[in-house]
Length: 546
Image (cartoon, rainbow, N blue to C red; front, side, top):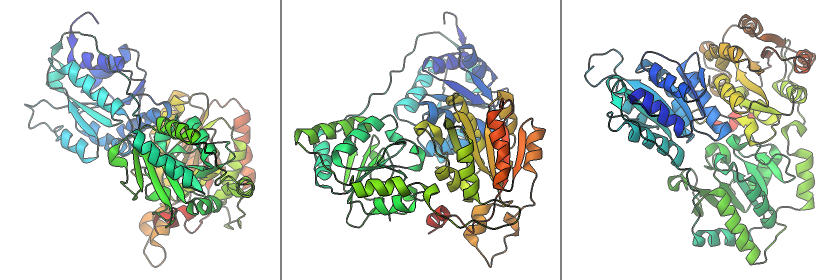
């Protein structure tokens, strides 16, 4: 840039130069200039139909691409519309930048005026501000650096009067964050625990993505079994010793083997209530270790015997080096008997079940297994929240850690469709699959137009029980539940009205329509209105509400 420009244009340029991969948003008068500045600098922009959808798309894109992603919103109502999506990203420590307009300091009576800094901080995001033309470049660089280096969701407020000011050009650069190497003493303590363990289990979270080779190698040396939190599903796909997801989604065999471990190591994993089943998967005599780059994450959810501050890949490599120096290589949990049990029973689809009999409705397990068989293996599955959510999470296999996106830290329904859009754009060589409940589908319906407009070959499966199923099963009998039941909706017809292909599934044979779509040109997205039988409350929900 060789000419003077407005602050809005300068901020767009700086954010682009800091490595923004893609932007999402809803454009109004307050954010038009900065959005166009991003676009002029080559940052692709996706116009969402609602700001919450835009924020969730950006969150998913960042998770599935490991790149900085941007959200652009109007002042006041534009920001408040996006807050649920921003909350999810903030709670998940997604490195994401929100560029939001703000009212001028003098506009105290503007109807757009709210305390945007307070609103942002209230949901756990970092609030930053462009203060003046003189500080604009530094303010934008600081926001990008915080997002990238501290893995935070940052909201950069752009007051309208400051946006219009003129700024002098100058080059900028944000260096890539450096991985944190653990202290040698901490590695030695970890190595001691690994050397003495007879049944170690590694549980990898989102912070372990990119470290699968190091973890697999260390696990082989230590004789450890491998599991993931829900958000890291797919990380150890295809490994003989993988148990799948740890926590409420664990298969019976996986839960048994994890709870029998004498050492559990959480790698970039919070070991929170969902991943440990309220701590019950950590045996009373088991040692617990947590490895993380954030000091305040260590022991935040479960007491740990050892907390290691360090990058997962570096810590695993250092621990293996020390084990090798000691000449240690153990069978540990990797016995022939355990190998056979994992091969035969670790998947949920290998567990026998009695078919739910409900006229005109399909068992959600039968539906999910049928979809798993019908859909291409190269897929990216995104799951909304609700009673149904365990079925696609455990019955739909994924090829790797970039095949599953789970925006559930805030436990909001209605994020799944936008999640699938962000995922589809980040992983364009895979079939995007959105698994939604009927409640979440109706909440996010506006973004169905976005799916069609972008030409995404998406399969949208609606697990339709005509209710907010989690509430139905949570409160149980003896309570007036009229407020959470709804008339059955012809979702397939709604989908066709948006330009999608729409099919209704009541029986296994109805899934032939899905197979035909897969075999065809996939010119239009496919919406599957699956009328599911009531399960009386899913197994994972029983664990969550225990």
